[in-house]
Image (cartoon, rainbow, N blue to C red; front, side, top):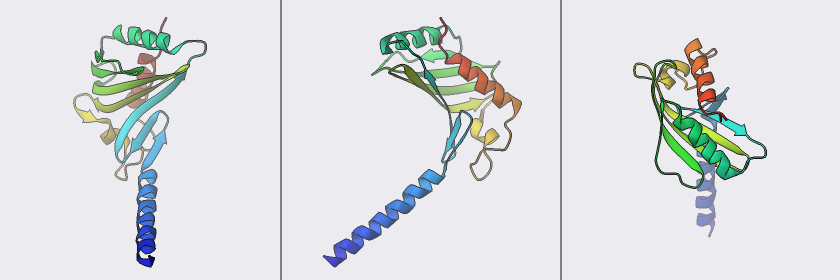
Length: 155
């Protein structure tokens, strides 16, 4: 019995150390989140007085008008996914996105961001310790604003 308790306590301690290590590797700056060296751009948009199906259709329609957006054909459980492709004005070569539509809001996540010609965004905005650099280059600030505009609903 004592052996089982010691094994449990040992495993619990190991789990706690691993959990703290993973949490410590997640950092946020503006709309960018870095987790274990992978950068994701995120934004949460609140919309009052609009039902979820209307939000889904409005976002899909808005994204379809953008020449740099390729929506996936499947829509599951109020989730839109797709790719951003070759947007020279943004300095963007490619990325993937996911839009989760909730009640009166939606959350956008953009991952796998590759800048022109073929530079992963992580090489530009993360230092060797996988933390964000102090000041983002103007091209990253422009990309941030353009992504925000791309995923806003236009009526």
